[in-house]
Length: 397
Image (cartoon, rainbow, N blue to C red; front, side):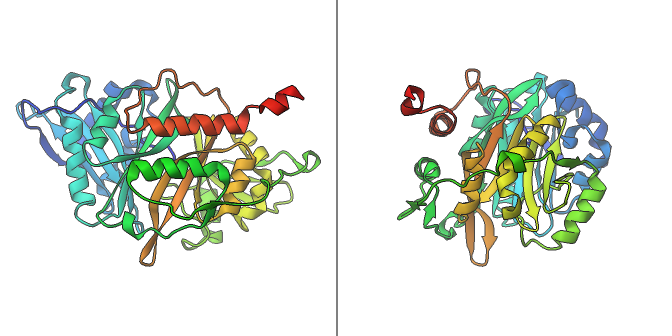
């Protein structure tokens, strides 16, 4: 999932002084900006901690909940976290967990996360909440794990915070949601190890799933690959997107609004994406007239986004659409995470895979991985090697 939230926390222990936890209000914005600067410095690529107008909108959003922690003796604002929701959706994002450096190891991150989940998840307002967690230390993984979140995979090179970092995807589901998943019958063979890894980690099954037959689809011929125009005009892009997709049909990417459009000169297709230049990442949302129209052109799309500063490009693809999954795999994307029961459909829920591609060198040597996340890292490393390293027969030839 797109890394628009990069929690920072510390191993939770019993606090010596119980913090005062209250909903954030507009009057807190100045202190909140100081808090996020103290935690992240000038490189935090999220409006939640940097843009006063966006912060005010989130504080007043009826579909979201933002909580702050204060020292009971001094009243100083020492911690912050939010669950961001949206109208018409029952999925939320845990984001912006920040604890002031002078108040680490006090259980503040865990206390805020627990209070948020009680208010948004345990209350039945949402079906699931996800978080993209920094891997520079094990603390953030422990914070979300102790609040019932379980690992779903790894997002390599997902965000640029001073340097390129990998994130871990975690989620927590409401009771009974995982039991209502709509089964799939086949997926591309490269995804089978990820299904087995997720099944073991989450205690869910994929019985009878077989690999799709046939080779991966061929990319567009080089003589047909042209330079794409990238239109970066958020209001125009959003308005045009809504004209093509007035409802939820044809696309699904929670909590992401397109701000760039890519199209060839003849306009035969339009690719909509969310580009975050500050964080150096991009999420591919959908295409018009349909995703298949642009499937053969994922290579030039990815190159154009890399030129625009996106060192990491990801796509969220339904597990029940093997043709779409195969198209991304054919263009060098690798599946690093699986989000089961992500989208509600009647009485059931659809699973989604997160596929990504990085234009920068992936280096896991500095990654701190807790034991529950390790199988996903191993799975990704094997999948990346299979996709990008030559086989012994290729080397011999």
